[in-house]
Amino acid sequence: MRRARLRLWLSRTFIVVSTLALLAYALLIGAILVFERAPAATGQPVPSSSERTIDPRYADAIRAARGHVQGIVEQCRIPGLSVAVAVDGRIVWSEAFGYADRERAILASPRTRFRVASVSKLFTTAAMARLYEVGRLDLDAPVQRYVPGFPDKGYPITPRQLASHRSGIRSYRDDSEALAIKHYGSVSDSLERFRDDPLAFAPDSDFHYSVYGYVLLSAMIEGAAGEDFLAGMRRLVFEPLGMNSTVPNYADRAAPEQSRFYDHVTPYSLDGSIVPSPDNDMSYKWASGGFLSTAEDLVRFGSAHVPALDQGFLAPDTLETLFRPRTTHTGLLGYGLGWMTMRDLHLRRACFHFGAGSGATSVLFVYPEQRTCFAMVANLGHAKFPFDQLMGVFNLFLGSGRLYAAGAAVLLINLICWCWHVRTRKLLRIQRAPSPNTSESP
Image (cartoon, rainbow, N blue to C red):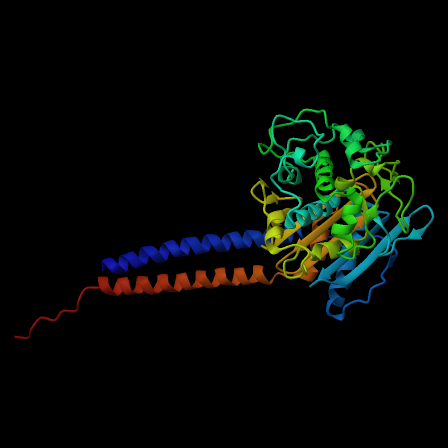
């Protein structure tokens, strides 16, 4: 009897736990339906161009994804945009939408070079990691080892802190500081913009997203590599990965097939209308947001950060060092060395970075376990790609097998617990029932 009661208590406990898990799963599905249900584009589709043979395995996904991209272009009023998807290191979709130059009616193409803004930071951390692997750069060495002229701030400042925005180096004071007219002939010269300013906080005591932190990191990379930062980026990152379309955004000359840039937010546009971006010399922040690239080059770069596909670019342990969060926001979003990480609503691990600046909006997502990369670049500043439309594209190529398998497992466990509970109650009733009258006959 005592054993049966213990089994009944355990069965009730398991039912409660499994039912709560089932409820949590139902809430997760509800969140997906609410936040990832993207509205269809309603306007006239913008022209598009594709120069890559569509993989027939993804023909249906690409057809549906076009609708989501058209929706992004429509909702955000984007003049021109390019998207690329790579699976197992191979580009399976690349297409451009709208105009590289709206005034001259020049269509965007997969070859169009866009500003990638802060996605540039990922290029910088890749160069840092390459130097770290060959012993040229110590992630925990003080800045003065590689940049002797940088003033002491009372605390050691290291590459690890700079790459994770935990150094205390300040960022922009206001939006106007993001625009620059002065040209800097070297990374060392550009340090003048912040070198004498006090730290915002003691290193590693807080997180503060810092453009200038990456400028200082690029000076350390120069010192460790013994060469100019832009030359080092070509040798360490762009050439090994075949990123032939990724170049600096020079102020005095346009790269071949460079997009024109547009803005619609203050201080660039006061009434929300889309206007050509003002001149901006990126020489003060190459490492933080100064590169042009294509969506195709971005997914090539992303694929090199999937351990199964990196082909020796970076060791798996180094990749995990880049991805591992040093700061966590709201318990969900982590920031490592350049890379942000999270679990999406489908329980898939994603490593990513966004870019937003004058004339640029960009995003690169890497799903290491699915070996899939997504990139989207646009020539409108601060366009704020809609989350539901982005996930609409992603889900078409990723699927949700793990999520549905988890749901099926939770439901099965719940059913097993109920069956066990019913059987236990039945056994307990039998044990409690009075014995039949077995008195002897006279």
